[in-house]
Length: 457
Image (cartoon, rainbow, N blue to C red; front, side):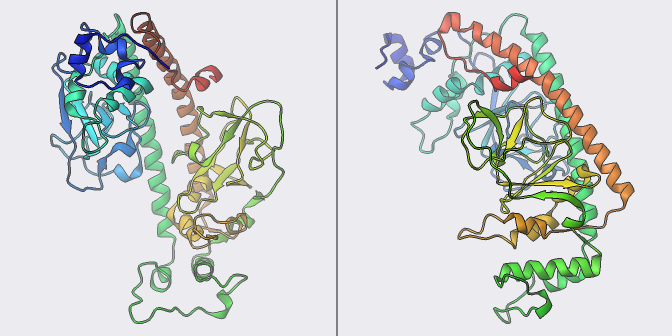
């Protein structure tokens, strides 16, 4: 049981007797009449566009304090009041609340109705607000005060008047460093997006035209529900999707000179020894830890030993991992050995390519590979493929010079990203320490930002 003294003035300001708000970690801040707010800062809150467009930012694109840049957003900018602008704070309407500061290098695309944009803030105010909204207790209290809404989302009136701790003295210098780092990270992300787009375009162009006439998923089959397959396309499985995948792969090999993946790798491990029982915790690489950037993140959580679904051997340099979750494929390229041992789960297939593994990792990300795996899923839900299915993939006949160029560019990009991550962690830690100072006035409410990654770095 938690007890807290609630003043009449606080009850009047809150308009409710919600004990989670009145007795929670943010209660002291809510009762601080000297705290600022977006109203006192003369900030504007803009609602997102309700026009359905592909080239928009949404809540799913908001990461920790920054936007996730993907190739799907590479279109012409749209200039309107619903487009993000430099210095905006873009936040998700619905819990879990996340916020990102918009750097100059981010394209001014529309943001959709899942987001609010807070505008007319200086850099220090915008960065400070971004880190506050990414604090668990702060965001939870803001969401809790909006429960009267018909939908579980942030109310603009509550957002306007929600108290904001005073911006620390001298924070302008730290905010400038964060803004500069976020801008470099956005530019760095765009470099990878362009490389991935180049790879996808070339791989797509190497698919024989006959494929689209025979086994394309959009082929008109209104005349009959069945399809004819030649006997030579039939292998061990008679499942229609597997037969279709076999025909697709045979056409790629016969008409496009695509090569079996087994001829390009020296080791393909889908089955191996598991970690078993250990006395200490370990860093585990799960599918959810990896995005579209092919990297092993520095912010991996430690898990308890004894997981039978974790490989016994940690990640090795130049290793390529590809997920067995065919409905949402992920790829990892280990350019450099992590600072600590990382053990992948057995939802990954571990590949050791004979040469240019970075280039092949980029190829494994493309739709041509994902399409093959989607047709070879098994089980009731048809989500996962087997390690054997991965070993049956065929890859395009890329010129060595192209592969070497892609490989070196991806390695250079990952090294630059790792350096930016270390700079980013240091800046985040400085903001965290400033937030901790406010606990002298408001009591404990601040939680670390990926503290394990900061300690490891």
